[in-house]
Image 1 (cartoon, rainbow, N blue to C red):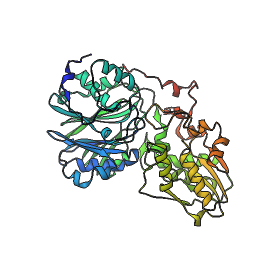
Image 2 (tube, rainbow, N blue to C red):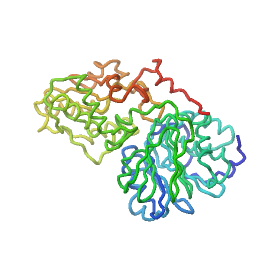
Image 3 (cartoon, rainbow, N blue to C red):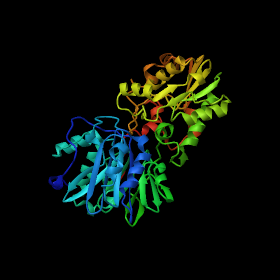
Image 4 (cartoon, one colour):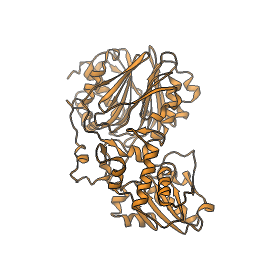
Length: 485
């Protein structure tokens, strides 16, 4: 390993905070254009990915030099039209952040940018580094100083130390070798940006999605294809695990940087995180959620007058439940569009308050009815207990709860904010009846794991959060860090 180049590494914008940040579920967007300033396209692309992170947003663009602007807040707050008009350049990357461990302040907004050997390079990251804690310790013992608690900083510093040359001379294969040679593990999509190129990488197991768009305006890469709606699309390509793309102002080239491993696509992308109008892992999210609702209705029938969705990610499964059961679909809960997603708020009290501000029960629809509530999942129970109370206070005769996913019983190593086992309500209340009593529902049923696999398939998906950690399955075997030679 080569470390003589570390003295040249300067220019981090973030300040040091003690601790370890090792897991994120975020959104990335980037690209290049021959004729257009890239900043407005990145702004709009990140806006379409806002559901993936609401804590901070950032952009890095340029031509001969790279300019970065980032802060805590929503995309249109941080990257306002006034700001975007000042950012000139035809190449760049952007990021929306949702932290699952560590700090959620403005200092940890991405992209991260350093100046190295007189040149700037930026990185934006969706996912997590499996070996983050050990890697940080090893690098510190070698004299490295970290200015943030994010694993993204470690990725960039590791690449700098290994390549030891100006970013303009970095090669796609060299970066890919650093990312996979006894280093990362975990689940990730990563974008690097220099003044001339964007390098994008999808992890060899394919936990996280990554998509390319060839458009009239240029070539773009994103966490989800829904972000390309702002473009005049010619072609959309879903990057395969272990592949990436080199994007310049003049075109793009897809290349493989690591062998494709047995696929482990994150099922939670479909259950909750992705937008319903996205196509994730070659499946439409909306249609998949409808099928989950139908399967839940087959497995868990209920005598009810109306089906009420928990907006927004409960809408499609509730529609499927209604179609399959014949119970009328009603919008008994109205969503305040100005409140963000409660699952991805960083603290429990914020989630609870967010539920109260986010949803309003409609007495005119609910009063005197036997109501079945459909949600995408039950994680901590914060949302569920407040919703059941709202429905009862609106005059419901009975309140039944159905989850369009199985019980979440395991934490996630791969960047989804599934909390500690003790926080998971399916564990803390031992059994379904215990959860039912906690949320004060008349009945509670989950979609079975087998039912979920009927919709998605038995192979190629990561079900680790739904399977006991001591179960000897292929899903759990891939929790170990696997080196890719």
